[in-house]
Image: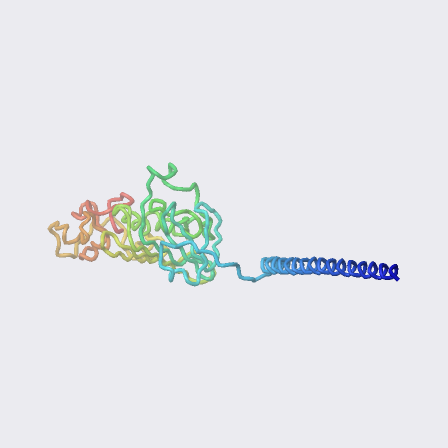
Length: 318
């Protein structure tokens, strides 16, 4: 009887020990299972996030994360609405212009902004301040230019058209297609274009500069006319002229020749102050005409020493 009781106790003890072991194993197994499930969920979440980011990066048309836009200091933001800001090397010789873009055509730190229309025509140039070229601190060539050549805009291959700068090298302009138009050679070298550039140089610069370039149609890159507005020493100047040879126009109007000018003004006593409206010591053709003098002003006229005879032929305004 005693022996049976001992066997029974031993059997119960074994059963109890086996039960505890199963419970411990089960708890451990459950803990490991939970850890694995959590890890798998984290892994799946990370994978889904990575896949989503990769898909966003590769998907066409997907908006990029917002980036800080570089500040534009040269003009009001409203000036640039509807245009893409494009960076073009100042010495780029390509004659092609992209449509509806605005390009900085100022050399160095200058900010001169050029605008194209939907046809790639250069239609407007603006600058808060025109800063003259400084050959003592800038890499200017012996020719007085920043670059050895200018952009080959369609039309400049003509024998009578120059690669005309809207803002000249001497005024700090570059030579790419966004500052070049095919311009009549005489107009560019000796006419109104040359005269306005000289006026700005003589004044030491200009402010509130704007050029409006007009074309006869949407197919050509050769302008039909120019309108420049700028301020010299507090005086607003407006220059408007056609893209034609001024000598031919003057000849057709009978304004050429060596006939001495006959003043129609009552000012014949040499009172320069009444003609030189801005007081800079130099009389422009426009000022002379406004004072009632007819053109040309010849070498023997008292106004001649105060005027600019660009071609040194003894006449101004021929």
